[in-house]
Image (tube, rainbow over all chains, first blue to last red; front, side, top):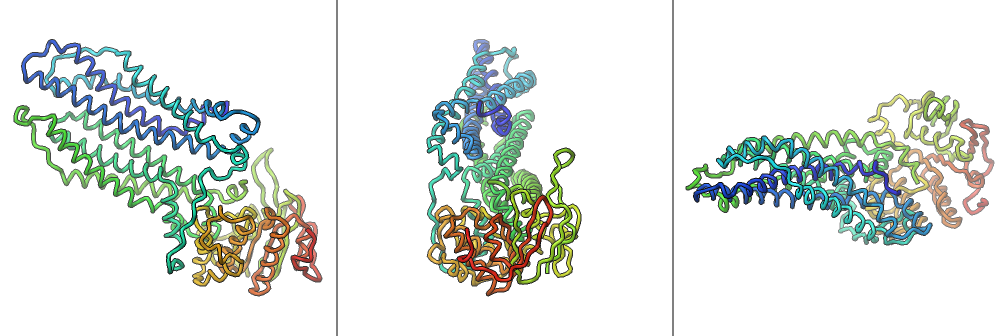
Length: 385
Length: 230
């Protein structure tokens, strides 16, 4: 066994993503399946419309949540597999040198799917814990008849078993592709990436401050981290503002709280993952900056502050996204003249509350991680290799 | 002048404690070329790290012209390294995503040195200004790391096995260049090595074993990098 289950502990982000996605999808899909059982009890065009509305908005929530979180989980999982291979190149290279085939090594990466299994199982369990409250609120909101909660085994297959198999297979295939390199290259730990040609500096390049160039280089070196940080702020803005907007147009408080909660958890988890990776991935650079006498403030500025514009662009786009989505949802699913719902309008006050709370969370994160830069052990890093 | 007084350093605790330095005292005069010589585990690298302010001793002091750097807080110690010392390591530790020009600028900017490209020319990398470390040979990478350290205009240059990863020809070139610059600019050099031949280039040779200095010798004549054995 090459990969021990404890290696997958680092897949905490994947676990949280899966739990959130499955929690939402189980609530809505289980409700929709149970609603289908009482469809023949629904009479009248208005009740039928409410029924259709409830089912279709549930399906849309599942598609949006499941799709977005699923795609992010894929990116995150591949990121972890790549990170694992980069960190264990020598050991993997030795196995190849001893005669193990790429597939024999790659198939051990199935254990990365365990985090998906754990996350989806937790999400599924939580969904059943919340189910009575969810049903009660949903029925009150939609004025539909009482529906009994049923356990629908098909959801176990679609939301736990298939994702686990799919993600395990993905981890195996991706690692198989990544392992297609000469054994010696892996043993020596040489770079997996192609040698990127350095661009000649522009005229007067000597005048550009070194720390600014370093900041730009760190930002451009790992696109996945830029994506995660962008995603965290996008997600936070979209879900927190949307939770308020939904409440404004008559949505339930529970739904709003659930959406905001998931947004905050996702944002914090993703920020945690990204910030930890930024520090560990640049440990040698940080150590050298400190050895040469760059101050803690200068190190933090070069390593962390480059992500700030990305973060706030993400927040702005998340705000626009939720605004567009709300407009679309109101136009497609809600006929205000029939249901008497209030008009949706962008709430500037809510935007500023969400922005202020996000600024506090993000800047606190940066402060904590700037402190962690100080604790990068110089001697240990210099004794490596 | 650097004065190390009764430096003690122990790693780990209890049964796994390893005593790296057992009360080492040493004086390094300004402008001297000092070699710390010893086998692996003799404590020479620990002494270099303590002398340069990278690590603090458990006991004892390290004074630069009377200022005890072991008493400095982290911020002041960082400022001390910024102003006084340069480092060259066996593994180069160039920043991988930055080209030679920018790596050297890392050191130059700390000293406000805007003429750092001359140093890059001097180490023979003028035509490799915009090459990444991965596009350079080992010798070229070490020369880039020398340029980076010198661009900082240090008072003391600390070298930890600078030729350890180089072939003989490149190793001699690197040592010759460091020696010539040391004579020209007058900074002090403290070099760690396990190669007794290299010690013949120094003014003072400090032999270490098991965390203690066992001999301090002064060379009558400093040999050049091309006169020593390898």
